[in-house]
Length: 238
Image 1 (cartoon, helix red, strand yellow):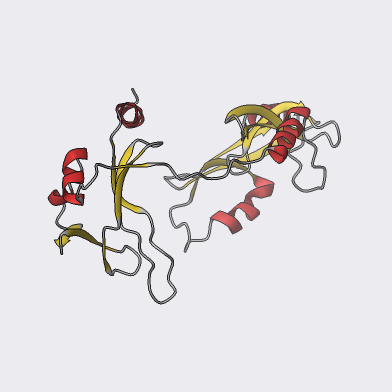
Image 2 (cartoon, one colour; image 1 turned 135 degrees about the horizontal axis):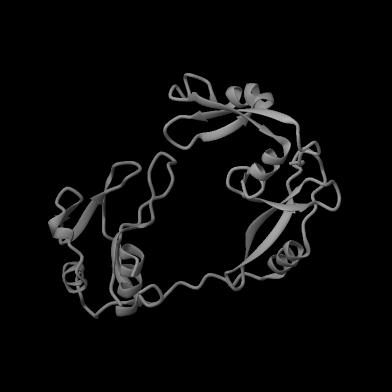
């Protein structure tokens, strides 16, 4: 993205909206390409041009600075790339080891091989490249000795018996329908995870006919006090 040099240049823009995600001002010179991408009646019959305006080069520059780059990949800054003079883009990158978000910048010139990024960007890339991810260690399974799956769900507060459309009791076990191959499969494990603090009932199952495996817990609930408090905070914003 290059800023306009002539601040008095007249630019015609059209406003398009579809009642959902699209509500953008499009430069008239870009209108044809925009409609080829977004205006196909079969794909977006609700797309309509609802307004037109003329702005000068100064207003155009101000319009883009702080605007969205790409598909929400960052925002245009008021700084130019030292290599090609296109605007730099502000965004956040995560340091994988710590989970910290760091503000970085990269060049908005996607039509060339400029590829300029600032020092912070390079620093985070270097840290992430050298970071060795810890090997996965399965969490410990907590369950009372001799406890049945029925006793377990009652103790932890899982309401399997109140969901007859999802769980059925056969041969002293809970069964549920595989969401992939629709076969009815039994509970294969149940426990409270020492790390997550979740009480879960599992229905591990490998589908037939080469379909993907369905090996995820079918149902679970926060059990540890700290897990419940964290979960409630996510649900209710506390």
